[in-house]
Length: 307
View 1: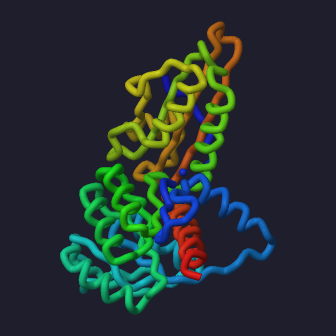
View 2: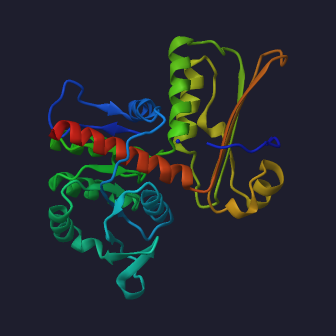
View 3: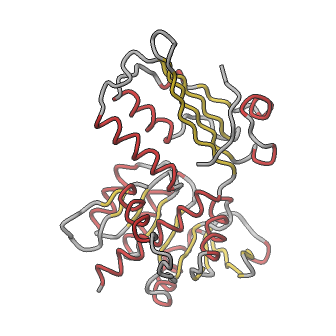
C-alpha cells in the first residue's frame, strides 16, 4: 500500500581524462565530494566558460540552459533538434539559440569548437542518440556531460576511455541524491547484513510517461540487498496514476508532469522496529543545477590537465 508522505526535496557516472593520469576514472560521487569541498569557502571561485546544451528544445535541456545562464556561464547560441522551431531559433534567457538539424551536428560542432575552445557540451537528447553523439564528441575532442539515459552504456564508457576525452556520464544528475546514494553504498559496504530479516517496501511515483523502475531506485534497492534484505524489483510499487499521486502520495498538481517521489520502508521481523528513507523531487531544477555543477567540475579538471 502507498502511505501518505510528507514532501521534502531530493540525484554521476564517469569522468575520464583526456590524457592518461594516475587516476583513470573519476566517479560522480568523487565529483560531488570534490565540488562540496571546493565550494566550502565563503567566497567560492567564479567560473565562466562556454557551454553548449544539446538539445535546448527538450524540457530538461531548456532547464539546463537556464541554470547555466544563472550560474554565469556563457551559453553557446547553437543547439540541435529534429523538432522544427519557429524561425529556426529558440529564445532562452533573452538569448537566441539557433536550432540545427542533427544531420549538421558534426560540421557545426567542428566550426563552433574553433570559436569556443574551452567549450563543454551537455547532452539531453534521446536514448537512441546517446552512442552516436558520444562518438562525435570524442571524435572532435569535446569534453561532455551525458545526462541522457539509455543507449549502450558499456559501449559509451569504452568510447570515452578509448578517446581519452573528459566526460561525466550519468542518468542521475541531482547531486544531493547522488550523495544519498553514496551514503547508502558506504553503509552497505560497512555493515553487510545489518538489515537481514527486515521487510522492504518500495514506492516510487513519477510522471505517467515514465513506465519503468528508475535507476535511482534500483541502486538503492541493490544497497538494501547487500544489507541483507530480500527484495525483487517486481515488488516495487510504481505509482503512475495522477489521481493516486495527488490523493495518496501528495504530489502537487503543478508537478504531476515532472516529479520523482521515492520511499523505502523497512520493518523488522516482529514489526516492532521500522526505518524509512525518502527523497521527493518536484520539477527539474535539481537535475539542471546538478548538471551545471558537473560541467563546472569537468571544466576544472580539463584546465588542470591542460595547464
